[in-house]
Image (cartoon, rainbow, N blue to C red; front, side):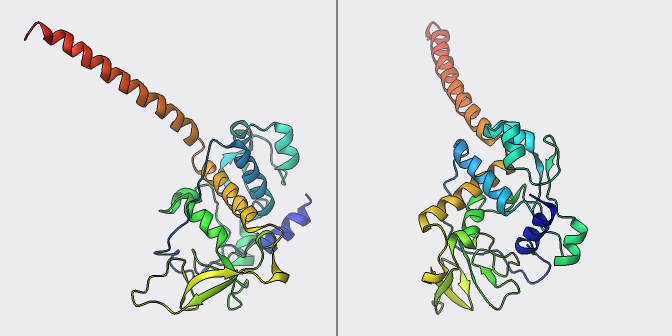
Length: 260
């Protein structure tokens, strides 16, 4: 990808998290489960491809190296270099964006943040990321023309709209308790979303859900690359402790048999 194309993607996709007027992130919204499976390398590979195609022009993953990602996801250096590296970075370097932070700050008011730990920063973890990617809707009052139910007032445009389509919110007045399970828009509770026929995306709702899930899984992996290995070791550790406890019990019985 040329430098010009990278900058163009940055202009279209970046404005992300620009300074100012961002309200509390989806307080009280009931999150759908992302059902992330860090052991599914196919999902992680698809998520990596999605991230590099739609997010990497603006957002770095400064705590992850291309070489570590390749090793963990079962990819070769050639595959990563050819398909997932869109800057002049070396294979062993961190996954930083080609967007100059100073230029980004000048253009957008604030440089788009590093997303290495985004799936760990929020209390809802990966579920937050998953629901965030699913709840963009058209809002002409916003500078970029988009808003988000999970992160009201978000400055980031919906970079995946061509896949999902342009959602419009369906709302109803707030109930007496003021609780809005799917978030709020224009001072009312969101009840659902509609996509006009001429604004439908290239994917079905089920296919887009999988896209959101794959991208979420990749960001969850980046946030804690050793999680899958740690969990597998944890299973064996628990089994060892269970066996040791059983052996200790029988040993105790043997020692105390003569005492009684």
